[in-house]
Image 1 (cartoon, rainbow, N blue to C red):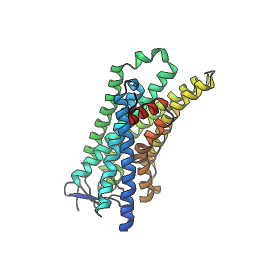
Image 2: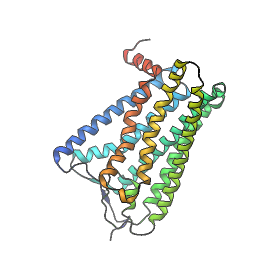
Image 3: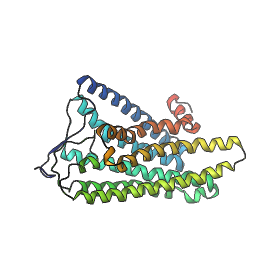
Image 4: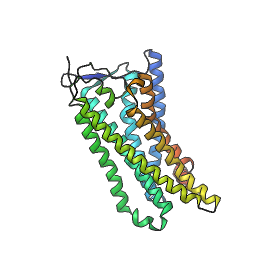
Length: 307
């Protein structure tokens, strides 16, 4: 029976078995990827070049765009390549690298969304202390903590997952290397160690989600006390997009890792994975720019070259 050391490659789930549908999947994912690359790249460029956007909120948004680009590139590019060349294979090393990077970007993004909720809480509920609590050094430290947390989490999970003996083949019921799918190939109770580690990580994710919700409870209470309807509208326009991103990203992520095995089947797993790996990076730029006039003006200035 093969184990983790003898497996040289894994076989990923394909979106379709017909060649025409495989090519359709390639072009569909290519369109999403290029749109994501363009929109996130535009946000990064605008925030980096426009000094008016050198504020904590936009600094964190720039980091979010970087993480989104890394996240979608990690999963989508390999899937597109396999569909184009009519193959399902990924090397053992490539699978380990993909698992590490996907956990790294997803974990760091989750931490960053928590930091962004704190930023909005301070800006709205404690505006007089905003510059003190969120100075440039504090923002850099919080962003570095988010990236560092994602790195350590990914390193721990990747090392632990690939130390587990595998003896149930090499076929994964997912279009990228994902921990629950790899654990299904385990032939011993060693998977319980990684399962316990996943429970701890999910608990931390849920804890951060609770902090985000509590932050928004305080924000909405403060907003409802604003006498001006225009003032309330302005605050909601900056907070609701962030809450929408958090709900989509964390909700699907928790469902993917907490759902009962009895309701786990390839199509559902595939849809859920797309919802937390492909959709957020693609829609984040739209959500954050749709109601943000400052960002719209900066983009227009960059595109038209107006001073």
